Image 1: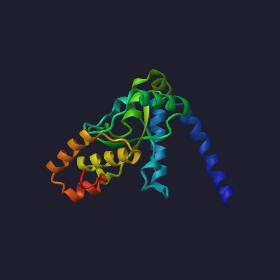
Image 2 (image 1 turned 180 degrees about the vertical axis):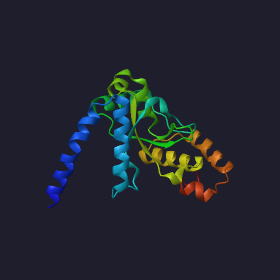
Image 3 (image 1 turned 135 degrees about the vertical axis):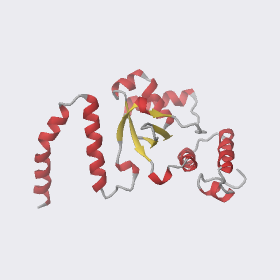
Image 4 (image 1 turned 45 degrees about the horizontal axis):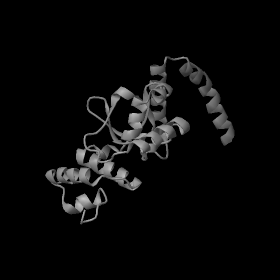
Length: 189
C-alpha cells in the first residue's frame, strides 16, 4: 500500500529531522541543501532548475557585469515590500563560478534586497534562495542571453544597455540570427 510506504518513510526520517534541527545554522543549511540535492537527483523534474532551490550565504552571491535591467526607486521599494510581506516567492537564478561563488543571472534586485535591507537579511539569516541554470549554459554568451530572456519576458529592458550586450555578442562571433533567436530580439533591434 502506497500510504503505508510513505508513512514508513516519514517515520524513518523523524530521528534525522530532529538531528538536523539541533545543528548550528550553517551546518543545518548545508545538510538541508545536501538532502534537497539528493531528492533532486531522483525527482521526475530533475531537468528543471526550479526543482532544486538551495540556500547560499549572501557573501557567496555576486552580480553579473552585463545586466541591462534597472529598477526605479519606487519599484525597488515595492520589491522590498513584496519580499517583506510575501517572503521570497521566486529564487535568484544563478551560475556557479570556478571560485565557489555564484553569479546572478536573474534576480539581481531580489539579491540586493536580501543583502542590503537589514530586516530581510536578518530574517533570511544571511542566506539567499538560488536555483542554478543548466550546466550547458556556462559560457558567458549563454548566460548573457539567459539574463536578457528573463528580463524581456518581464517586459522591462533598457535599450542602451542592450546595445552593449549586442556588441559583446558580436565580438564573440555570434551571428545576427543567433543574437535574434537567443535573446528574442527583432532584426531592427
